Length: 399
Picture 1 (cartoon, rainbow, N blue to C red):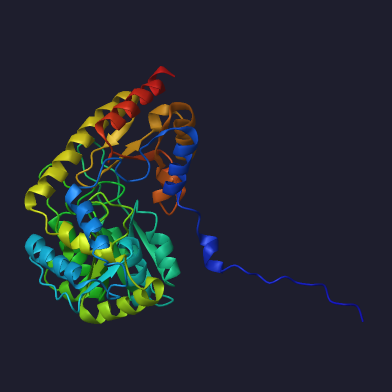
Picture 2 (picture 1 turned 120 degrees about the horizontal axis):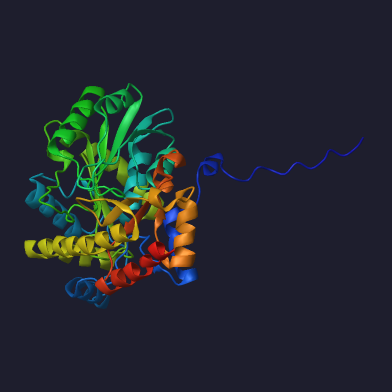
């Protein structure tokens, strides 16, 4: 009898077929390869506040180097609860409602794994931070995308269609992911928009998962509103945040999820088996960071506003059409004037020939064609870095 031909096993998970590597991180690698100015990935190139770094050093020296409580050091959980009360008027029980994770990225996937079942749907506004779609898929859910459409004028606002949003909600909708201030658009959702989302969440019994990592980076008299503070939302909201953006420590990977006790308990179970806990000494430093005076946050926002207003005229002069951000530290642009077939081709040209790295807009959309004439720049950089980028971008006009 002839021996049957060997059939190798299919060793890879089917779910990874839906993923590509992070385009944002890939552009950072391209920037390093070609010696380009990195305006792609959203990390500052200036120092973190001295008092926060000193707090981390002191914690390490004091031997806070072993496991913290799995769901977070008490000092940090109390600081999170205190800040949410002070800034948003939301009462939080630090013992039953706060889970400290390895960055807000882990807080998001832990939350989705804790609440989603196969067949559930998760509503996601697009353009979206690139993790949200894969996170939904990893949790067994299906993302349902609702478009934020760019403004027709530079001073306008990104907006969604109320009818499109309502149509995305039905009996299988488990959650909606809301990122405000928004990455990549810089949109800050208004009270009226949040009320509409609240009404839909209550009507369809949906959980709001709100990523508020840029809550202190606001411009033009805009206000950040946590949806958890709206009537009926305290019992159905998971508020995600972290140290990375407000304190310029993106490499520390300390974030958190604040949720009702039952959801918190589920998040903690996932978190425990996923990462055990966030870095103990950095949690102690985080408690110090969250205790900084209000003047720190005013200076933070003013500093980023100055950077925004420094970069945008240079982009406009170079030929980009800019969409003015109201929060976060990114600016989305339209590249139609340059005549390139798509955003990927253009960003490759930009990083190799011009020496500036940006993120292709298509990476923020479910259908890449929707972002094929957009790219995103990050302006969380020193003034001299932005000046050098502006100098290089002038070559676009010269070409």
